[in-house]
Image (cartoon, rainbow, N blue to C red):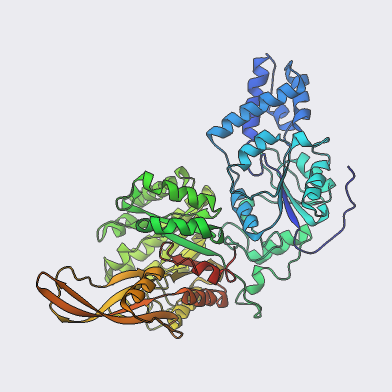
Length: 610
């Protein structure tokens, strides 16, 4: 097939075309090991140099080389099938994903961008990989057994573009080998080269990058980024975006960097949403994940607790079997899975651990093992005991040890290409009358994390009142943004819960009478309906509330409780997301899945990045 003449177009891509081996999955070592086994079986000699020469080639072309140079006396298609059998067997044991590939694929799927898998592997192998990914990850597949001329010929990419109904000149192709790059460039595609087993030198007609983990949708010319484009891993987002997009011929006039606070005001961007999944609400959370999980960028299973430097395990009465169904649902959603870890050590315990370099180092290694063994995308550190149980008089001593811990954990996770999220209470600039939980020192740890989630809720804790009044939420957002500097790293914690408060009591209550109890968006309305109360939305607080009286009698004792219910409703969640958008923050985090209502998601869908 003849490739079209190249011409420059500056607009977002019509589709993204993916190579598979070495680009999405690191299967080249599997192919090479299988080649060695097959050649050895026939008494031939094989070498890494010969193996590397096959990277990216059509399988039949590779088989011919193995026959001629490796002495494998079999028909071409028999060699191909022997290779496929060996690699598929290895894939069945473990799929070695390339860094950043699944995340970028998930971003493209949520954004509705057409995608094609363009691989010289045969369909039965390609489907073994594709079947593990969320449905709809690829719009079409083009495999080596379905084209007449394989890479480096442009035919595979021309066939993929035709199947999608788009011009190949309007597509971005992602390749890991010189052979694949030649195919994509010859087809007229704007090509990203991500070297793996075989190096790809700088050249004309393509852009060379080190890792897919370094880019996001903005870099490809689409909307605002899902992941922290300004993370500690790379250059500033504007510098990296402009360089890559210009090289690919993409539009760069309206990307995420144009919505930063230091630029002129413009239309508000949508923001990504993350959500915690508490272990005590799994039954209520599962339907939400299954119905609305595609709208969520990151899920944080709230399942793990620290009880010692090397003692990190499941919280409460959770058993591995309890989380299996939820874990599967989280992964099927396509979201990043970043579990939360909380501090359950006694008062003084975590402070002592952080102060001891040896114990701190062992704790860092334990956390990294939790992430890698579980194949998670990162970890969320939510350590609160050392702040609230130890007392403010300990903060000055604990603060530098905490900063050292985050610094060391960030470097260790960076080394294995995982994300570090840290969740902290509100902290305000020094000029504020109340500095908040300054022991967490967000200004010092910001350079070492991908995301800082700030818990902008629990405003009223000792008496009935709003969960998170809007004016206070904005103060929290602005204070954190001022301290951190890079607003894209700040994620605003948003409540989806409330409390049912006892505000006064007459009579003598029996032991069965309840005190203040939590409510969800659904249960708050159920209580109102049961008690004949009429909820009122307070636009100033951005929350709903109602009052009622409850008579409790048991064992000869009786009392009347005057109660108030305050909760953040769907309208309130929307208002808080708008604050994150107006303040140009990196997103919002919902506390929590299982507390939300089904109507919440369509109510906020137009504000969030799917």
